[in-house]
Image (cartoon, rainbow, N blue to C red; front, side, top):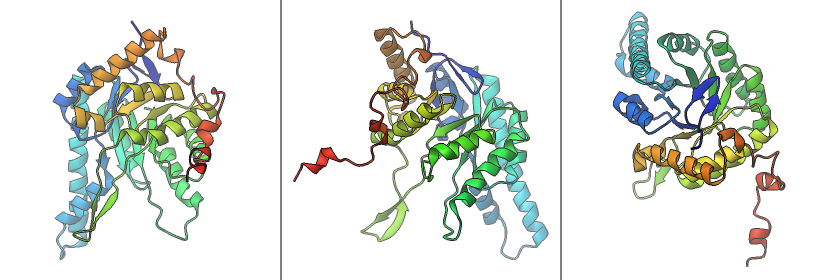
Length: 325
């Protein structure tokens, strides 16, 4: 029987498949089902800085005094954080697998203190889900990147548990950016964020939200950058995310160099039991290929290992469409 164990940020996982942060991972009963389906770890639903700020603003009366506003903001913040801390403690007391907390932050600041509270609550690691939408046309790319570096640097200066940065691929030079994140203390990266995306209804002529779920074709961007980054830095630990809808996708990402693979949308579309299906596929594939451990084949098809690395580099279709008229 294949051994699916992996070591991720110092944590021993019984499988490289992780339940990614979503609404399902805020429910203890569902978390228990995920554990029974064989996941190596769970990432709890994110607590959102923007959500706390919005709830506080809605609770403040227009004619309120500054002292009242401060009180309401602090109360809403404390209430939300206490609820999240309760979720961590409940998960840790119920599950045997690692529990990773998730913070969705948009700036550096009080989240350093929050990270300390999550560590004290028993979280095994923290995934910092950070995305700063660059809307200032006068800001340089280095100004934006420094915001991420400051978040990592400040959080790592206060806590001892591993910190995983969940990122987008919207950076000028992703390998250089991630190399600096590691230098500032990031223990691993999650590739990639799945964002709220706008859509336009042409009948109502209104802006709304696009589908929140990923599709299998979204795997391609994750696969490209997992292969490139793992090939450039063998010591970089990558948790690959977005577009993972099958056991085959899990195998592909591990071959490209991922240490772990996160699943989210597929749990909504096919049920939590899909996690068990993926684990069985991975185990069966390893047996068929005579691989005993994940490390026997992980990174086998990374950017540094394949004969034709241009497959990862190529961005234009070139010969595929050039001859078609």
